[in-house]
Amino acid sequence: MPRPPSAMRRHILDSALRLFAEHGFKGTSLNDIAVEAGCSKASLLYHFAGKDAILTELLTSPAEGLSALSQELAVLDGDQAVEAAVAGYVGLAMRFHLEVKIIFAELPDMLGHPVLAVIPEAVGELADALAGRSEEPRARVTAQMVIGGVAVTVASEVDVARDTMRTELVRGALRTLGHPTS
Image 1 (cartoon, rainbow, N blue to C red):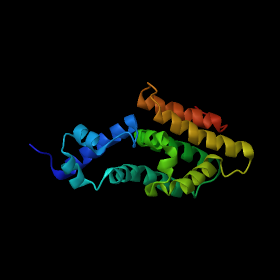
Image 2 (tube, helix red, strand yellow):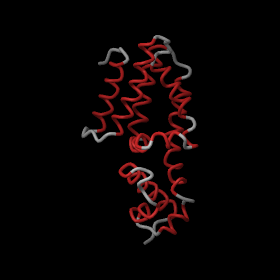
Image 3 (tube, helix red, strand yellow):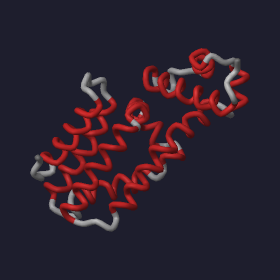
Image 4 (cartoon, rainbow, N blue to C red):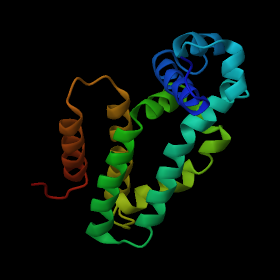
């Protein structure tokens, strides 16, 4: 029995996400996605205008999540900003770990993608919150270290349970930023 259109669309997206994360955006063809999704290329093209449309849909939620986190952090200062930024960023990175892997695999091309246009400003706001709004060089550098370290860690194949990964990412980020952990 064929899937309803919305289920097929989701299945195509899930298949593309796995393939893009494993082989890269450039290394995955529409035919690869159709085969993985168990549909014809014509069916795939019925649901999506092309590979870029699939990528756009896959990257929209992470970009919107980062933008929303940026807005939440805008009203916080000091330790409150740092703790909310760490928890929010780790949560987003964990939730969208395959999308992060895709972005990092082809970073220069991915950052030019229109759906990711919000990233530089949102990352700047995240870094500011992680630094506790401080202009001190140590705070600014460690904030960037946390951004990069969390992203690279969730994009790698670390064999750790997700709850453990989340806990250790938060602890490590807070330690890096010079905040006590429990």
